[in-house]
Amino acid sequence: MSVRERKERERAGRERLILATARELAEQQGWDAVTTRRLAERIEYSQPVLYSHFRGKREIIGAVALEGAAEMAAALRAAAPAADGPRARVTALARAYLDFADHNPAVYDAMFLLDGGLAFAKEDTPEPLKDAFAALVETLGEVAGDGVHPGLFTEVFWAALHGLATLARAGRLPPEDTEWRTELLVDRLAMA
Image 1 (cartoon, rainbow, N blue to C red):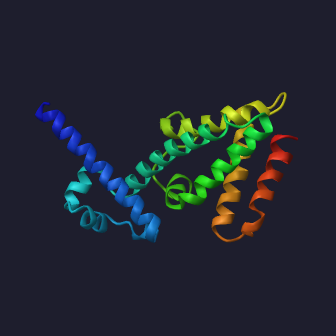
Image 2 (image 1 turned 30 degrees about the vertical axis):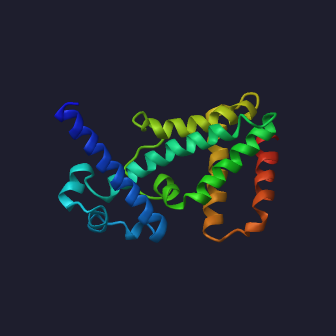
């Protein structure tokens, strides 16, 4: 292995450590607790080393969002194929989305609620974000209906899922009705 390859591997390892530490700290204490000073202390590197990887917290949030988008895409793709029939696939997709949001609140916030400097629905949208949306379209496109653009239908369904996830996490919706809400969303929007 060349010196250059070793340095690249070490750099990639430091970057993974920074992101894993940021995620851990954000999940435990919220994103307000994630500062470059605290990250540098936790990973035992100087702040200049941290800044050699990320220009600041915004870039860290963006990198976490991209990781989260890849993870969400994988979770969505894993959920739908096992289900039998369009309704079951859409229900599985909705549950997987809501479970991801529930089990990864800091990552979900990085993806959709915080400024990570990422472009959505544009030419320069990063591939992991496009792929997460594509994972939704793959299942939802089959139930969009005649004359309805699959991407537009997916945006509306995604907006409803995001609203459910966000309101539930904020304690604004009773948790005992989560399954009923999911079924209602699938029945009224996707299977109408």
